[in-house]
Image (cartoon, rainbow, N blue to C red):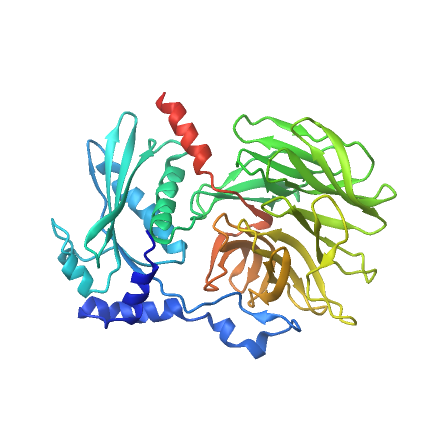
Length: 478
């Protein structure tokens, strides 16, 4: 069911009512305004020919009231914790004005749609956690206030609180709410892999949930482990490691913990791996050894090294489009000592530059990544030496870019990676408050810090992990 016309009607078709409506009005006004940086266009525009802000649309954010989750059959012991996870996920989605911690006066034994309608609330989410075996069942109901009905409901298995999947199972429920309201994917049930520098200078691969919780180290190479990339099913991670002294590509199976090195069939440094959408093939760069280029390798069959480009130039960071038809990468093939962003057919062919290069200007653009929706490519760069790196996005039209826009403006921002919702990105950044990983919403420009107090680099956002987690939960039940 498409609820957007109702949201538009609520936003513009009737006044706020009541004391709570008066309190909500400033919040809704803030929700539809572009961020301050986007309003200071002429002060921050340093990329000639680049538009400011990605969308920063005056898009209505519908208010959703989340009533306190209840529990029975033992579910009451975790109900409030699950509610907090879901509430924060919906707030981090940047799609709603989330109302939780509600006063007792507006919460009764029965839903009074008329009261909530007067408060200009569009949606009400109720939740009940029931004990079930060693775990729980979360029962969610989404109420449409204007039409005074339950429009969607679902039952979501939640394992015991000491399970590794307790939080992820709650994230899956949050993504279902986003899907119900907007008919678009969420991003809560996902993780971010990144390279973290330790006190001895080594770098290992770590992971963290999309909300900044559940930080874990996944490699122990005691060297340099870099450039993680997720397989399409979220079960494997490929990365570059100097474990043997030479940069080689490794693949880690997250289900079994098994790790293997991808066969090095020619000399050179093996760098920046990424998966084909079918998950059977890796694409990566080999630099040095006489000639450099982009290569593919069939990891399913453990064979068949093939080159797509090969020259004296360095072609780095190849990434497939979601349909596997094209590849984006950065290259210094202009011969000016600075990289630019190119796309080409997936089987090789003539590259086409998409970064905003202007002859005579020392622009520098690198680290491209294709959105999961296939409509945009994010990368970082600068127009002149000495400027901090910022995130730019090429909006693609049938495989060709129509325009390039600047997404970030404050501090330094590098190495973007798209969330599975095609709306959010994780970036390595530095602000007055410190350095770390940040999540930026490409629609509103809102930004939040994901991890802090550490040297975190080269983040990679996973696909939705819901299928993998749900399979694990079914295996435990049986």
